[in-house]
Image (tube, rainbow, N blue to C red):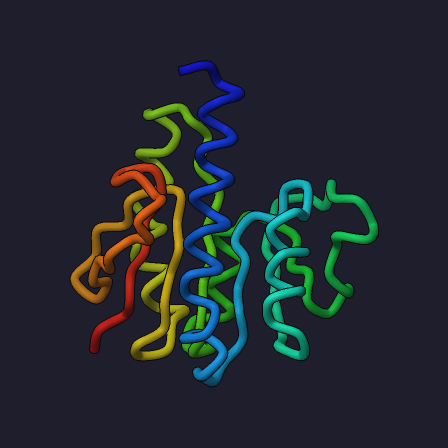
Length: 160
């Protein structure tokens, strides 16, 4: 599969999962967290799906178009591993994570801290959608929408 096709499949999976869980997340208290702003496309999608909900975004730098960038009070700039520590216990309804690099060695390093961080940011029963597989005892894998291939994207609920 070409890198372009792979990207398209990943974006479809991301969108399909976020749309699939939208109604459930809307019933929950707590903010939505976006780990990785990138170009701001997913932030824009989340903002559309969750109007009025606080969406806090983390990234090492802001490179998104100004129309797809959160207000300064909801944009946390710096190393996500460090900056997100200040939000542990925020009881997020949803954490969306798209910080994979496609390089197994680099992603393996991220996976040494990301699952614990995601679990610590979530409210009990909160959900995390991730482009990387998160193995953690508090994160229960959830079924994916039918259009999403296993292993393309991952969905979890925080258990107590």
